[in-house]
Image (tube, rainbow, N blue to C red):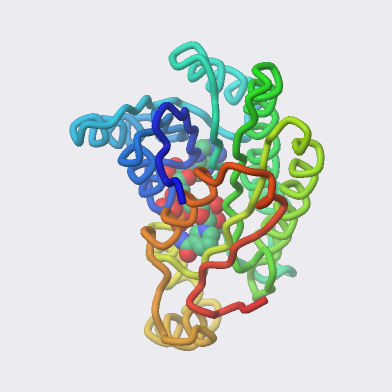
Length: 262
Ligand code: NAD
């Protein structure tokens, strides 16, 4: 199978850290020109510089994915620089945990805005470019095992991640004739800043130790007690970006050490 992204222009949101950063690095190593779109512009610049130092092509783009004009301007900046967008990885995300009865409405709205508004706005702008050029492309959403499973304390996250399955399926249906494929990657727990922050928070909420959160909450249902890695997720993102036909569209791929088996 072809895993080269030579001459492809890829936009990865939330690429200044964690999973998105590794996807950007793997894409660049596969020959892509990669836009590092992130709220944190200094960290995005640093990631872009690391990729350039390693011999790749990268551009940092300041973008809050919840802000329509920032998304429009950010994607326009990529198109101005490289003439097109071939691949979007809508990956930017945060986690806020709480019991439903303690959840602030503002926190609920913030979560849905980042995960769902962000995915919609970035997909829309990239699809507009793909439609204009009639060249097709790949739209990849960063879902989660929580696109398929529920856990306590995560009402907006689980709701948003389930929602991304629906959005990707509609993109697959609307994009088919244009050669635009859309799929969702659903990772298990990956040790990134998003998860490291959550371990003490869950320990406090559940009244257990941090070790118990890792062993009995996060990794309990896996086949081997192992965390998923950023490389595991980035390799699936490479496979989906490089896959060339509509045969693989509207799907979700779960990468979770067997935590969730469909
Ligand atoms: P991370 O905290 O390491 O990185 C998230 C990045 O998103 C950061 O660089 C942050 O600045 C950026 N970001 C946050 N809000 C933004 C906004 N409004 N606009 C633009 N950028 C924004 O987190 P991560 O673990 O790498 O998570 C990346 C994605 O993977 C998220 O969608 C998350 O839900 C998903 N995910 C993570 C795990 C996990 O265990 N880490 C598991 C499944 C899914």
